[in-house]
Image (cartoon, rainbow, N blue to C red; front, side):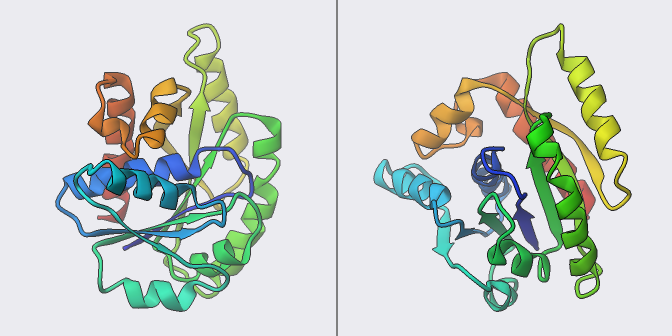
Length: 215
């Protein structure tokens, strides 16, 4: 299966989502490849740190840019899961990935600049669907507030905005703003390999939800 983690907004946690999912799949005995199609190379540097510090399991990472559709078609049968990390903008890498992916997960914060990109994403998804009707698209709320006074309203506002777009579905899983995510990626690790139960539960819930969607 091919899972594209992409959006038209930078800084919303795409690479963090990719690296944590990679370890979740690997722990489930899946052969995983990350296709790093973002020239910032965050996932590749993470993989390099992981290899440098000899953290197991090893995650294979391939850097590929521009039109990646043919590469994805070739990789589909070689791995159980290919996770695609693209830049946070309307890019050739993202558009070509949509044509081969089974699932698009779009991480977004509950902020107007992030949500304003959904109109553009809607058009991209509709056009991709003409060539890849199997593509499923889900929105994933990231960096949500842990403040008890605002978290419920923030989630409610996020849901209401997403529900305006029939082409999108909203994941039940939520990624909250926690320092542990930054610490993990800087060490070439996943939060699944560290001791923060809240973060572990968040990634585990996301992983299980994705498995159910694709089953």
